[in-house]
Every structure is written in C-alpha cells, then in structure tokens.
Image (cartoon, rainbow, N blue to C red; front, side, top):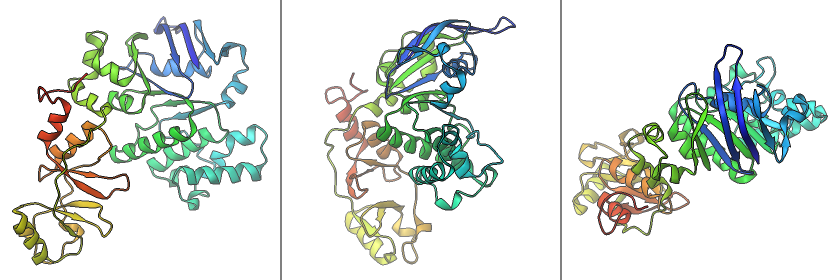
Length: 370
C-alpha cells in the first residue's frame, strides 16, 4: 500500500501545489489521480519516488516512509512511465528495456533475454528490438516505455499521463493492453490523467483533486459516478454520469433476435435475396468464422460483397459485457440493431435499444438502477 498522510508541497515562490493530501493506494490495485490543471496530480505522483520532496507530511510504501530510503535505490524498485515513453534516444529498444535490470546487476545477456520476452508480452514484434525510439510509432514507444518500467518486476508502478500522446484508437488499444497486463501481474499502480473517462475506465479507485492540491473525493468509479461529493466533483465528472455508470452494470440475458447475414465475398444477388426475404434494408456481413465485420445496403451492390462495401458504423458488444456496451451497440448501429457476440467474437444475435433500456430499469424504463 502507498499511504499519503497530510502531505503538503509548497514551492520556493510560495505556490502551494499539494495541500494536506491524505489517501491510500491499495496494494495490487490501480489508483488514478485526476483533476484540472494545477491540482497537484503530477507533483503528488513524483513525491512517491522522491523526484520531488514534500514540504511536510509523509508518504509510505508498505509501511516504510520513503524519506528514510536512498532515492536511487527507491527509484530502482519503482517502475515509472511518462508521456511519450521517456525513452533514451541513443539506446535501442532492447537496451532501453534492459536499463534497470542492468543497473540492478543482471548480466547483459540475461537482461536482453528478459527484455525480448517483455517485447512479446507487450505485443511488439521482435524485429523492433534493434531499432531506436525515433524509428517507432507513438504507440510502439509507449509499449516500450511500459515494458521498460516492468523490466525489473517492480511491485509499484507510477504512470504520468502514459497514453495521452497518441491518437484515440491507439490510446484505446494501449488501455486494453494495460488492463490485460494488470490482470496478470497485479501491480500497485498510481496513474495520473486529466481525462475523467480514462480515470473511470482504468481505475479501481479514483482520487479527484481540486485546484490547489486538496482531495475532493476518493472512491470507486461506480460510487463516484453515483454519488459525487459536491458540485465541483459533479461538474468535473460531466453530464453523462448515468450513461457512464452503465459501464459497471453487467448485462443480463438480453432478448436476442436471429440476425440474417451474408459471408464476405457473397454475390450481390444472394445478399439482395436474403435482405428481401427478411425485409431488411441493412444486412450484416460476417467472416467465415461467423464474426461480424460490418453492415451493407444490398440494394447498392453491383458485385461481390467486398470490404470496401462495409459500413463500419456500429460497435460490437460482448453478450457478457456491460449494459453500456450493449446500449451503445444498438444506438450506433446503422440498422439500429446492436450486434452481440460471444467471448470468441462469433455472432450470437442482435438486440434493440428498447430491450436494453427495459433491462436497465424494468419498472420505469428509465435510467440506470442504483
């Protein structure tokens, strides 16, 4: 556990960045610090590994006050990930990852072998090992940064805006990869972000900080959305709190309808016949394994169904996922039928938005149940 006790940071010019911060970041969990600019998020994070020294108060890791530890030894036992990866530009990917193990005494051969395993775990091709950071995409740099932080298998990881420097699609992929790794490794993680959606998606607990470095609320994402402590927290969370809460409500067994489909590569005549038989203006296209690929308007086809014909609008939700995912699938689909799949991605059927809304509140047909 990481424990902040009445921590204060006042800079030489009199700026009070953190003011009486007390909170616990539980072992094996992700605690997210979020808030507007000037709320002391990054300052608080950097006081954990003593990159910044507090003016008063204490920070302890598993009961040991960090001020009693040698700063260099402390940092070698803490993984640290920053925006854009923070990689050494003059070192190859494999040597970047091997940096801390080498400092801790691992042989060059062993450190590099372990680094190659981490590359694979992070979903990176082994052929990238000999490249330099400037030769990587933003998403690849971030993956290497996370791999480097994990290289010495630290029990604690600090992450400062780790996914903010990449485009939204890559950011979502990195978040998914991060959550998958955390499920396997169970690190104690403190993560800083300015994005409340990211905080709610990634955090087991979310600490909302006010300008001036005071704690407004520390809670689980679900409770935070359900019961903001005051107007500041409610305004910071935004107006769609009810919809966001649906992400924490598991979908019950929804009434799925059989969805007529055609396989990619089918002829226009077949697609038009299936659509006519089912009286559908939109038709779902699947691959040979039954995984949904997108929608088509059969009447506009002139040849075989190609990928370029697919309408990509509409998300796909897992049947065992959340109510938010199921509702989003229904609302975003051009056919207004939400596509639900099993854990292997195979089509199970489709659901209408009204049926998802009925599952949210069977009695009222309204917002999310508490």
